[in-house]
Structure formats: C-alpha cells, structure tokens
Length: 225
Ligand code: HEM
Image 1: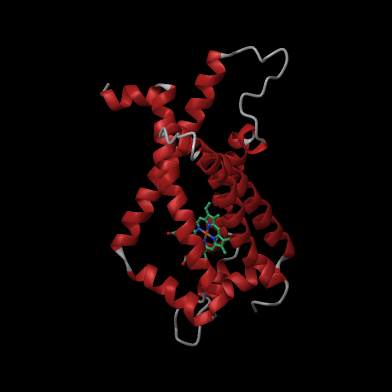
Image 2: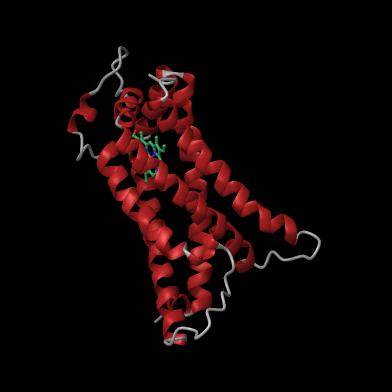
C-alpha cells in the first residue's frame, strides 16, 4: 500500500482529504450559485451562460468527472472518519459532553448524507430529466436549451421548491461547520484572528443558503416568470 493510501486510512489523513475536497466543492458551490443567479438577469443571460458551459464539450466532461471523484472522496473520507471515531469510542459518553459544541457540527454527518440525497434528486430533476423529461426538450426563441423556463417550471411547484429550500438550509449548516473545520485542519490558528476564522464559516453558510433560496422564492413570488 502506498504512503498516501496508508495516510488516508488514518483519521488525520481522512481529515486532510476532507479539507482539500471540501474546499474544491465549496468552489463549485460558489461558482454554481453565481451562474444560477443569472436567472435574475433574464432568460438570455442564463441560457447564454448554460450554453457556453455545454459548449466546453470534452472539457466539461473532464470537470464533471473530477467533480464526481472529489465528491466521492469527500463522502468516503467522511464515512471513514465517522467509523474511526466510533471504533475509538464504542460506548457513548455516560454524560454527553459535546466536544463539538455547535448544532451544525453535531449534525454534520446527517446534513452531509441529506445533501447527498438532494444532489441525486437535483441531477434527476434538472440534468438527466429523469423526473421531468419534458424539461430537456425546452428551447428558447434563439434555439438554445431553455434552462430559464426549466427553473421557472420546476420551482412553480411549491413542494419541489420546499425540497430545495430545506436542502439549501442544510447546505448552509454543513458549510458553516465544514469551513470552520477546514481552518482547524489546515492549522490556520492565531489568537488575534481566531474570532474572525470562527465567523467565516457561519457567515458563508448563511450567505450561500440565502443566495440559493432566493431563486425558488423569486419564482414562487412571481418575480421570476
Ligand atoms: C436553487 C438552487 C439550485 C439551482 C437553481 C440549480 C440549478 C441547476 C441547473 C439548472 C443545472 C443543470 C445545468 C445544465 O444542465 O445546463 C444544475 C446542475 C447541477 N447542480 Fe445545481 N442548482 C442548485 C443548487 C445546487 C446545489 C446546492 C448543488 C450542490 C450541493 C448543486 C449541484 C449541481 C450539480 C453537481 C449539477 C450537475 C453539473 C453538471 O452537469 O455539470 N446544485 N443545477
């Protein structure tokens, strides 16, 4: 077994893999949010952007495969860490002394698994057309795939919007704790800046959740139609 593979078996190695893959996924989440917010700039802007992405052709597939590998490594290391922690402490504490003191921290595995379920649903909904095959046939007047109309139709359903909104709240919690852990794992630690590092995660979690949630809410409110 290589040194890297052996390191990944340890909890420090698993934490490092989680930190690096988490940062890459965070980059995707921000980029994806900024792209989706183009819905507020109108149909041509959003569809033009989606078209440019699809025009990347082979490069887009490379990015998708890298994203999938990164995602699987993140989930795999999370489960390994969870198992290692349980093996180190098979009996629960008699008095629950919460070493991780925030709600987001105590629920990170659960929020992660629910986000995983959300991503599967989201891909079936918007990318693969498994739940709504008619979305993939939508074309705008310029002959481009109509991602804008797909979002409006998708989020006009209050139940679907509800699923997205709950998932985005979970994502906010997950990022809040994930970023805080990231700073600890990479050793960003300085008494003068620690109060600031502690705030970055929660602030980023709230801003990103609000950014994403604004899209289904705008459709439900009739602001985007
Ligand atoms: C309101 C929230 C969101 C909206 C409106 C949205 C919209 C979209 C759309 C329209 C696509 C298909 C793009 C295309 O085929 O041209 C897509 C793909 C995707 N979304 Fe989202 N998304 C949202 C939230 C998220 C979140 C929070 C994540 C991750 C945690 C995510 C992960 C993905 C992934 C992995 C893809 C596939 C990318 C690809 O095919 O290359 N999305 N999203």
